[in-house]
Amino acid sequence: MADVLRMLFGPIRLVEYDRFVARGGAGGQLVNKHFIGGSTPWAAAVVVVTLCAARCGFAAPILSAGEIVIATQSNGNLYRMHPSTGAVALVSSGGLLVNPSHVLIDPLGRILTAERTGFGGAIVRVDPATGAQQHVSFMTFPIALDFDLGGNLVVANRDRDVVRVNPTTGAQTPITQFTQVQSMQDVDVDTLGRIVGLDAGFFNSGGGKVVRYDPVTQQTTTVATGGMLFNPADLVIAPDGAFLVSNRLIGSSTQLLRIDSITGAQQLLMTIPSEGFIAMESPSTLVYADFYNGPTRRLNLTNNQSSIISSSTLAGNEVGVDVFVPEPTFAALGVPALGALALRRRRPSATLRRATDAAL
Image: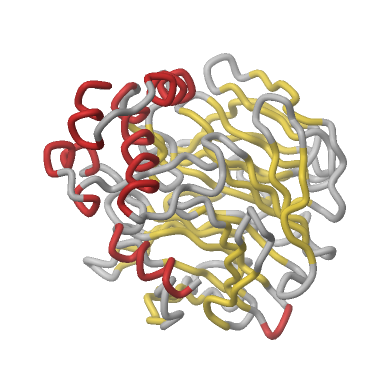
């Protein structure tokens, strides 16, 4: 692979290649919040986009692969956390950030968050290197956000509206309204482009559910309700399409549930002593951000055990977490021989990224 890279970009230092293989070789690729695929090609992909960033005029990722980003409410803070050492640094605070909810990292490592109340509500983008904030689009009380298959944002608000937002222009297009939902908590997009909504139900009284909207049929179905679902706080989609749900109970302890996306069958994986939010880190691990500022944990889906990443206390309740894995699109970088490697990716196209870069 190093020879291929030399052919494409000229002389490179092998340490550049080896460093990324060591970091990502056993990893796979995180497609939106869905982890699929293998190892070394992903590492090579990071090398290609990094080298091309320097030599072809594209912006290099701002965050390092595997870095964790956590949002806290009330104080309006965004933090970055090292996945191995647990070291924490404040990225941005105040300004457009007053009461954020959920975070999403774009392919270049910039942070997007749903600011619920500041300036009437808005989607805000933050540069993690400088902390600079940029308004993307104003809307009333956005709750959660995800990327769709075309690289646009899908945003759900408190009124249960689901809206498509162009991340460059901020233009909004209504998609649907989850009328079956009592309390909108999260929104995700699966690999078929269907929109999954998470209903927190009634506080301390249960009623949580998972619903799914198919934009092709324009029909919404309830995938799961009742059973163990009580007041779910967050949802990610596993490599096999199953839903992994952080399910808050009375007393604020949380169950990690696995829900079959077809049958709705629920399985208890583990219990965590506080409520919190989750992000896919690898095919077998999640990162868990504690709402009450307890330790940030790594949840192992193989043995259903947890370990502590960091015991640092963050200011304000933690209300969102994401993990950065770079996802370059080779075809737009002028590398047709490697284009097939990008076919399974769901992050925004490179054309959209460049347009977004120009706007920032």
